[in-house]
Length: 296
Image (cartoon, rainbow, N blue to C red; front, side):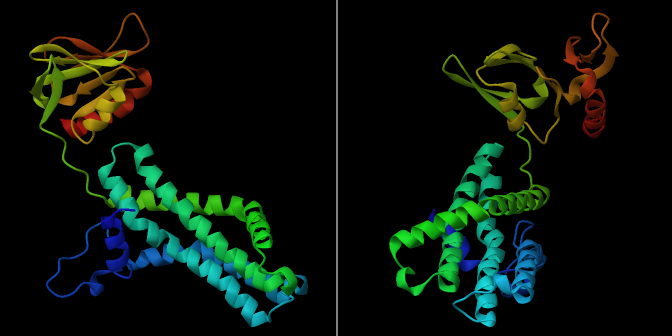
């Protein structure tokens, strides 16, 4: 865990809205934790706590033999109460991952690792709560007994735990991907060729074609080979005027002149301003036209 994350966790943990900002400090950004997010974070844990509390109150078989009803409800609430903090703890790391990483895999890895660490700690709290409530004093705190109970907790609650974390992760990424400001697309694309770095203005690229482990940049200067996949290029140029028309083609919407059906196949072709054509698959036709309107 790096120093910037520790700083975020310590200095911003309870900074939940603009009222918490001191005078003279700018308003929180779109990725700041907001008060309404506490409600979202509490929905799942409090729903599960309500179910557990109802079961404990009305079914004597669920009562703890070691502590009273109030203590059992308090220990159960401690477990679910900690669960409410999980999204808030993960939030700063999620913001960093979304802003720094270009691929979803790289975004998810640090969050999954931190989430697993929280799960290990959180279920350890549940283990000790169950030891207090149900274990006999004779061997209550023996290491082998604690390990046995801890394993049982994972086997019993692992499924619901993983499901809840998946829901949390989905909610966090939904919020962040909608609120995180996207960086503006680059004005030029740099490639290495024969030991030199070429800086190509994006308006000079007509389209990009996949060619095995390479891609072909069809530009005003000719064709340039780049050792990258089309998906990598697509991610690097996302948010701009380059539109994917085919699994093997990425087209600069600024150079589209016309779309016409192909005579030899069921697909389409896109006529470009340099009088060449690029493929357009039938299943991408509608989406391509919709995106093209925004470019034009």
